[in-house]
Image (cartoon, rainbow, N blue to C red; front, side, top):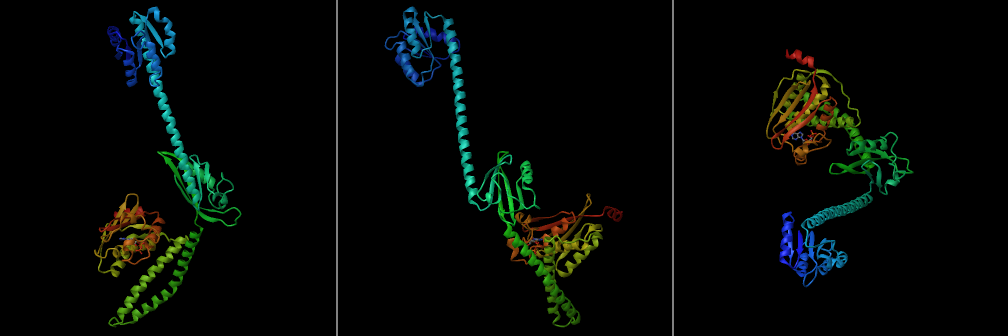
Length: 494
Ligand code: ADP
């Protein structure tokens, strides 16, 4: 907006008309005092100021304006009465004015000057805007940098306070920070702790991890400087991301040697205990079986012998599971694989469950006359385990389905479905883990939580898949797959 200041309304009118004809918005003031009031309230792009006015003259107004920080940069065009005021023009310039026009006004010259000032004003405004946005950008960056430094400081204090060996690296993997513990194990702040010669080389491993962008979780043996013995540590490192970009890595080495030793001792104990228990139990079993045969069916003591045999069988199964567990742990679970008739194995397993649990109805669905390549005893063990669990965990619904499907990729799928207590989603992923039992039902049903772990290992070793589908209160369907022998299937199917 352009402010026109003149004491003569006719002058104002003609100026206003010329400017508005050329689309310049205008405002007017009839005296210097009024002009100053307006300038205080509003910002103008240009002031056209008559020099000769009663009261405050144009130069006084300009001088007053130069005192306002908000307005001192507004350009001024003085309107002066020909030569009389020329001597004052320099005064006009020094008090902040920028140009003048002599009366009578030549509209072309006026427009030329107004346009120039207006363009300057707009360029100035644009420059100011850019400057302001640059300033706020710098402020923002400073703030973010400050916050980042603060966060890094906090992270370092946390890493100093923990007992682990801890470090952070830049996004490219170069070590940035290490805590005090680090120097007890590593030769310098820039190098990783020394690992056992048989373990993975950490420098290479770290390069691979950084290149992959995936978190690292591995066990390594490291030793502290000056010590002979290596201790197992769990090395964990995670990438820190901002949006999709990794900005740094944070990692720790946790000493897990004592846990490792405890697990080793426990495994040794289970192995020794199950071996030691197995021998006397086999003898007891043989004697009780002899007694069972010797005793007359009508003898009232026969019932006690039968009950003893049921318990002996349970104990025997537990010990066999424990022995299998130790074999898995020590990598000694052996498989005797050959082609066998799966249908017969399944019938045996179902028959055994029917005899032990006559009150349950086991319904078989689908064709199972097929040859499978694998360890027959072990596959039967998986079937019996799935079936026993189906019976055990469905005390109120005495029906179990065994569903057989042959998939085109030469895989036989076996599903054991019960309509019992079911399993929650959170537990479903864990039940194949060692010693895992669902807490809610652990008191109600006896067990060690190793049956499914052994099944999983057996199926894995047959290159098969295993899993469970279940709904709490509705029942569960445990499944596994094993490869079958295709030619046999075709000939049997034909
Ligand atoms: P155990 O039965 O000796 O506890 P398993 O390894 O066979 O050990 O099973 C692990 C856990 O999985 C069980 O404790 C039980 O909580 C759950 N589970 C297994 N089978 C079923 C099933 N058919 N229905 C419901 N829960 C089951």
